Length: 80
Image (cartoon, rainbow, N blue to C red; front, side, top):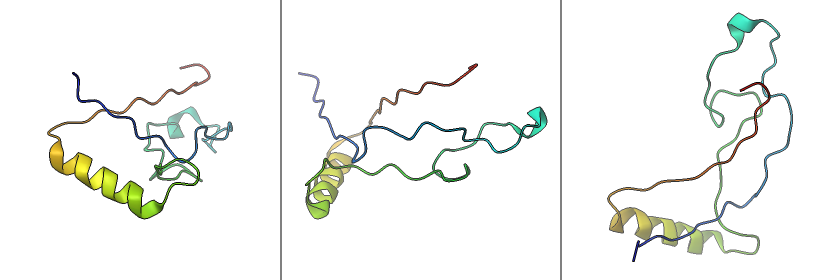
Protein backbone atom coordinates (compact mmCIF):
# COMPACT_ATOMS: atom_id res chain seq x y z
CA UNK A 1 0.00 0.00 0.00
CA UNK A 2 1.33 3.41 -0.93
CA UNK A 3 -0.81 5.44 1.45
CA UNK A 4 -1.71 7.79 -1.37
CA UNK A 5 -4.89 9.79 -1.54
CA UNK A 6 -6.34 12.20 -4.06
CA UNK A 7 -7.52 15.69 -3.28
CA UNK A 8 -8.79 17.37 -6.40
CA UNK A 9 -8.68 21.11 -7.08
CA UNK A 10 -11.93 23.03 -7.16
CA UNK A 11 -11.10 24.12 -10.73
CA UNK A 12 -9.72 21.47 -13.06
CA UNK A 13 -8.40 23.90 -15.67
CA UNK A 14 -6.70 27.28 -15.59
CA UNK A 15 -7.75 29.73 -18.32
CA UNK A 16 -5.39 29.77 -21.29
CA UNK A 17 -3.86 33.21 -21.70
CA UNK A 18 -0.58 35.05 -21.85
CA UNK A 19 0.50 35.38 -18.21
CA UNK A 20 3.39 37.74 -19.00
CA UNK A 21 2.57 41.34 -19.80
CA UNK A 22 6.00 42.53 -20.97
CA UNK A 23 7.42 41.86 -24.43
CA UNK A 24 10.95 42.69 -23.20
CA UNK A 25 12.90 39.41 -22.85
CA UNK A 26 14.82 40.82 -19.85
CA UNK A 27 11.56 41.30 -17.95
CA UNK A 28 10.49 37.69 -18.53
CA UNK A 29 11.72 35.84 -15.46
CA UNK A 30 10.51 32.92 -13.37
CA UNK A 31 7.71 33.97 -11.04
CA UNK A 32 5.29 32.23 -8.69
CA UNK A 33 1.90 31.76 -10.36
CA UNK A 34 -0.20 32.45 -7.26
CA UNK A 35 1.88 35.30 -5.87
CA UNK A 36 3.65 37.34 -8.53
CA UNK A 37 1.85 36.81 -11.84
CA UNK A 38 -0.76 39.30 -12.90
CA UNK A 39 -4.16 37.71 -12.22
CA UNK A 40 -2.46 34.65 -10.67
CA UNK A 41 -4.30 32.98 -7.81
CA UNK A 42 -3.90 30.35 -5.11
CA UNK A 43 -5.15 26.87 -5.95
CA UNK A 44 -8.20 25.78 -3.97
CA UNK A 45 -9.21 22.21 -3.26
CA UNK A 46 -12.50 20.36 -3.04
CA UNK A 47 -14.75 19.22 -5.85
CA UNK A 48 -17.92 21.06 -6.79
CA UNK A 49 -20.49 20.68 -4.05
CA UNK A 50 -17.89 19.89 -1.39
CA UNK A 51 -18.33 21.54 1.97
CA UNK A 52 -15.36 23.88 2.52
CA UNK A 53 -15.09 22.84 6.19
CA UNK A 54 -14.96 19.14 5.25
CA UNK A 55 -12.14 19.83 2.78
CA UNK A 56 -10.28 21.86 5.43
CA UNK A 57 -10.59 19.00 7.94
CA UNK A 58 -9.37 16.45 5.36
CA UNK A 59 -6.32 18.57 4.49
CA UNK A 60 -5.56 19.18 8.17
CA UNK A 61 -5.54 15.44 8.92
CA UNK A 62 -3.39 14.76 5.86
CA UNK A 63 -0.93 17.38 7.08
CA UNK A 64 -0.85 15.94 10.62
CA UNK A 65 -0.53 12.31 9.54
CA UNK A 66 2.10 12.82 6.82
CA UNK A 67 5.81 13.51 6.75
CA UNK A 68 5.92 14.44 3.08
CA UNK A 69 3.60 15.23 0.20
CA UNK A 70 3.71 15.66 -3.54
CA UNK A 71 1.50 17.31 -6.09
CA UNK A 72 1.28 16.81 -9.84
CA UNK A 73 0.55 19.82 -11.99
CA UNK A 74 0.48 19.59 -15.77
CA UNK A 75 1.24 22.73 -17.69
CA UNK A 76 1.48 23.46 -21.37
CA UNK A 77 3.81 26.33 -22.14
CA UNK A 78 4.62 27.77 -25.53
CA UNK A 79 8.37 27.63 -26.30
CA UNK A 80 9.32 26.04 -22.99
